[in-house]
Length: 338
Image (cartoon, rainbow, N blue to C red; front, side, top):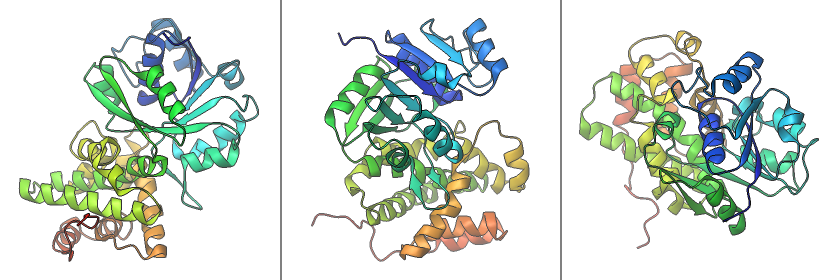
């Protein structure tokens, strides 16, 4: 039995909370850092994060705090689950308080503006001496909290990191798989959010099952085409962090990005949709960055271009969707072995 760890999880949203609780249930001391003092006190008093996971009881090993220095004191593992737009600022502050031996894992599925940087690259920028990895997969927090069997992927360049995180998080209902393709796993988690918005639009338009099947597979082809152009392994995209995450996020009403698309397809203005949401829909931020990067690199992404036209050029949803779905590719599968 591995020795218990002292762990900090930064980010008190639904996913940060459920991951922190799994670690606590596995016998480790966990500090959950969040910015809201009232919510932190309520979590410690009521053993429940009522804002994001009502009814999900939290283990006594978990302590919530708004004091970052206190959260980081004496830890050997750090997991970061803050939105992508604040990731660098938080990690930069973290670097002042932790040892270079502290293992740092990103749980954030997003891309930084102003340079198309992934979260693992930000960790390399701000904490270059620290061992690091990323966790991603088809991981809807509410289902994890409800005990539904779930798989996730830990990716790093060091197999001992994968083993450590497997042992930290593995349970009867939360299964951990390993990968060495950190870049591919992270891109899968970030890019699928864009296509989840598109799938929500399709659901609002009441498209047939054949059309939805085509949309999902063309989305997978498009996101893997882009990721491989950036150096990812195409095989990663047939796994949990690729097609698994894409399928779940593109078909579940629990997905924030899917709900954005559903509302868009129903005619609701984007500003009103975002105003009603209590957590970030990362696909909105990712879409503009992805479109610009694809154009710069010359990567053909008709689905991204179409969604961009709906959100930012205010073209009619039905017209753009019709154009997208009638764009044919010369090849069905681009990475065939023979």
